[in-house]
Picture 1 (cartoon, one colour):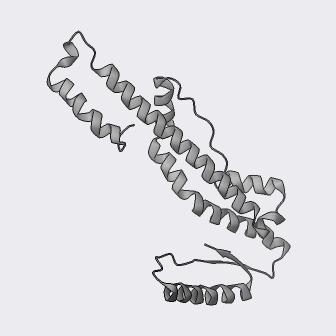
Picture 2 (cartoon, rainbow, N blue to C red; picture 1 turned 90 degrees about the vertical axis):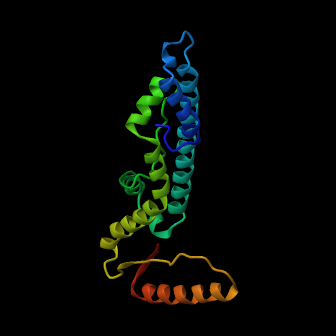
Length: 183
C-alpha cells in the first residue's frame, strides 16, 4: 500500500537488507520500526487524500449550487444526481490501528482516492448534463448542448484574445440552439 510514496523507496532497501542478512533471526526486531514508519506515512497519505477529496467535493457542490440549471431542480433530484456521480463527501475511515488502516486500504487503495480526486471536475460536468436532461421534459423546445473548451497555455495578450474569440464564437453559436453546458 505504500508503493509510490517516498517512504517506500526509503524503507524498501532496509527491508531487503533484513531479508538478505537474515536479520529476522536476531534478538532485536528490525521490522517493527519499519512497519511503523510505513504505516505512519500511509496513514498520513490517506488522511491527506481524504481531506483533499472532501474539499474538492465541497467546491464541486458550491459550483453546482451557483448554476442556474441546478437551482431549478428540487432537493431530491439534486441529491440523486450527487449520489449518481459520486459528488458526496467521502465517508470517514477509521485508521487508528494498523489493522484498520490495512482494511481501509484493501477496500479502497490510495490510487483510488487520487483517481476520485482527479475525476471531480468531470463529475461536475456530468452532473450538470444530468440536471439539464431532467429539465428537458419541462422545456422540450430548448435542447442542451455541451461545448468543450480548449485547454492550453496562453503566452501573451494576443493568445488570450485569440482564445477568447474562438470560444466566444463557439458559445454564441451553441446558445442560439439552446442551453449550453461549458466543459
